[in-house]
Every structure is written in structure tokens, then in C-alpha cells.
Image 1: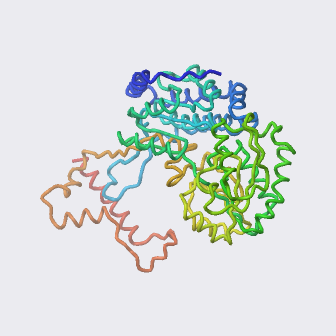
Image 2: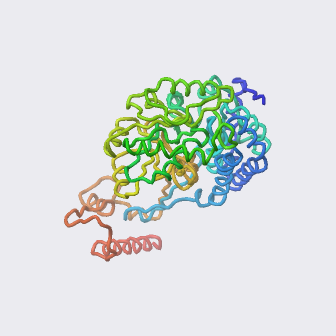
Length: 509
């Protein structure tokens, strides 16, 4: 399928049109947003077979995997946004101190403006359209750019985009690095980028020119910690699933294992059973086992295997013409090995032998914060100890990757693995400006007279009393309130009654 790259000369007019539509409030009405979300739902729902076929051509994804991990998630996110948009977009009223009880204070949820979403190739529908759901729900106008590497999927989405969505508010452009860099020269109100850390730095540097906020969904080396008490057969199955799903080309795929030598040897015996149960004796012939996106990435992965000082104990077979790399387990990998440097992003799973859990924690903390962490143990205290002493964007206990399918959990990284979070309401929040609003009535001028100069000590004491709390650190157990109506609460209630009485008298005078 041919994918036409956009001429960069088209970009200024295209972006200006989107900004004009936003300025005219085209996307602000909730009814409009819901209708466009419905149209996005229809885009993926009515064209599921064509989209699945494109995903198979690009990544050899099975229809089940494409439906669950790409199309189904977008459908569900659209439904969640439509059903909850009234609540998400409603004003949020906040508590105030006593001096502001006569004011109305709330937070308005307003769209940030015109936003740019740059997708990537490993989940070319999910990663492109899921942020779009939140941007539409928030009321933004949007320019999306698919990855040019998933050429078939990008072509299908491009064809369908203008058929289903209002082109006055939502546009799609295609291109490679040149076109992406050209887009980054223009001013947007938010940039949402998913991809490598190296390109993420370029995006952030370009955004700094206009102080444009960014969401960076990057990657990193997501570790697995295996305690000595794990269930070996279940752990093996879940690791095989996590590392072979989308052929390991997932930002939150388990990147390496940290365990003792005894656990390593037990896993090496069990993993082949899990592979055979999932993909048969020849995974290359399995309809459920994917392929590497292109020959450049195939060669990169092959180069890693050729340079590792570890021992290939499971797998290792490959076919460049078919872009096939067998799920490969590498044991006894040195801590400074090539497999421990950059994110692998493929079906290669190295095992680094450590002495104990503390040694594993030390190894993780000496490196960049991972996007995900996968601790396995039957002991809750061990799990808590790991969580208390490590950092990660997200964590799944005794499994891998499942947290990304829960829309009520924020998905995002920390440090070098990214910034910002999305999924569900968190995507809406990403593209929403929370505008603080206070309404000050004109009728209470006598009540507020003490704020005007000239000031005196009494004015200071009166304002401080109503504005600020006094500490009570002695005998404080910090275990929460027992619900008892204490003297301070009584004083607050009496003061509220007094203020109301003064206000009523002033209004009647």
C-alpha cells in the first residue's frame, strides 16, 4: 500500500485552520465532542477487518491480538469518554478558608487549544488514537501524525480519518523524520509524543522554544525481579506472554530478569514448555507469533545477539527475509553486557544473576527509572520491600504489562522513561487546562474593609485568624480525625453564623 507523505508547505495553512476552528469555539460544546467520539468509535468498529489486515501486513499481528490490544481499547476509551464527559468537564468546587466563605471558588475545565499527537509503529492504532480520544473529549483541535514505518496501517487510518471526523477540527498528516521536524517548528498548545528517548529529547527541545507543555511516553529497560519463592510454571508462562506479545516490541515489555542462579536454572527448564504450549514446536509457523517491523530493526536485534557475552540457552533462530526472530532467552548475562545497555524492544530476554532481592534493587537503582517494574513473589512483605525501595512508571505484581489495559490507572513514565500520564480520564486531564475561578460579591464591602490600607495590628490579627490555621503538633498522632466536635470546630461554626448575620444586615441596609 502506498503512503503519501504530506508536503511541508501545507503545514502552515493546516495548523492555522485548526487554530482558527478552536478560536471560534467549534470544539467546545460537549454535544459536538460526544458526536466526534462516536464517529471515532465507528471508524475503528466499522472498519475492524481492514484495520486488522493492515496490522497483519505491518507486524504479522493476529486478529485476536489486534482486536484486544489496538481496536478494542480505542472502542472502550471512546465509550468511557462519552459516558463520563459530563462529569469530567463539570466545574470542580473547592473548599476555602473562613475568610473566603463569601466567595465562590471553582475550577473550570477548559481545552488547552490546538495539539499535536505523534504516534509510533509498534501499536500504530492504539498509540495514535488513544491520546486522540482524550484530546477530543477535552475540546481541543488536533493534528495527528502516524508512524511511517507501519505503512499499511497509516494508509488505512489516513483514508478513514476524513471520512469519519470533522476535518475542520481534526487532521492527519504523514511523513518521516523531515516532516516531523518541520511540524515541531510550529507553535502548538500541547505536544504528545510516543517513541524513543533520543527523539523525545528533540521534541522537548523544540517545544521549549514556545514553552509548549509536552507528554513524553518513552520506554526504557523494564526489569523483572524474581524472588526465591515464586511459582516457576506460572512465572514462566507470564514472562513468555509478556515478552512474545507483539514480538517484544512493546515499551513495557519485560526487558530483563534479575534472579538467583537457582531460579535461573529452574526457568530455563520451564520456559520451553510455555513457548511450545503457546506457539507449538515451530513458532515461525504459528499464526499468533508476530514479526519485526523492518530489516533495520531485525539487524539491530541480530547485532545484539551476536555481541552478547551471555549464553543463548533457548531460541536464537531467525529468518531475515521473514523478519522472524525466535523468542530467545540469554542466561548469565554480565551486568555491563550490551543487552543491559539500551532497551531491547524485541523477543530477546536476558537473565542477570544476582545474589538476592537487595542486590536486584541495587542494580535497578543504579540505572534510569524504568517505565515498568515486574516483581514476582508470594510474600507480600517482599513485594512491599521492593516497592518501597525502587521507582518506576508503573508496576505489575506477579505478572507483566496488564496495568496498561486499565483505563482508571494513569499510564506514564518517570525520569528518562517519560513525563506525563494518560488513559481514561488522565488523557482528558492531559489536554485540559484547569482554570481557577473566584467570584467576589460586591455586597460585602464592609465585611472586607480590613484588607484596605491603612492597616493596623487588629486588621492583621483578624485576617490571620480567618485565613490561617494554627499548628497543634503536641500529642498529635496523625492517625486521622475521630469525628469529635472539638472547641475549634465550635468556634468555626459560630464565626460562620456571625459572618452570615453581618452579610444579611449589610444586604438589607
